[in-house]
Image (cartoon, rainbow, N blue to C red):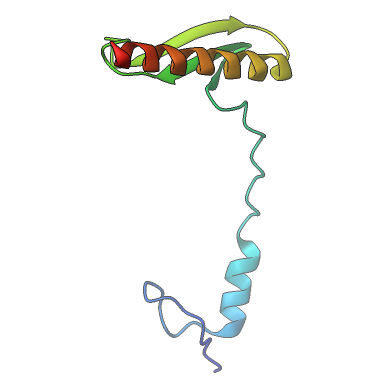
Length: 98
């Protein structure tokens, strides 16, 4: 019996090459993930939400701000989320200065 040299420490060391090929062939291929909706965007059913974590001084309820953008094309939602994130950053800088 030929023993495979490429075996991790958690697996039995006496797995034959034929057995290893059978095991790897029987594993299903991983699903390809859908493209991300974008940074700061969360899908909630058919609606999109903008969310960003801020300091607790600005957003006292756990520091998380969530704003519903409603149903809209993803490209437009990404643009709007970028603008909202920029506004949130400017607000943080302005409040930190005071």
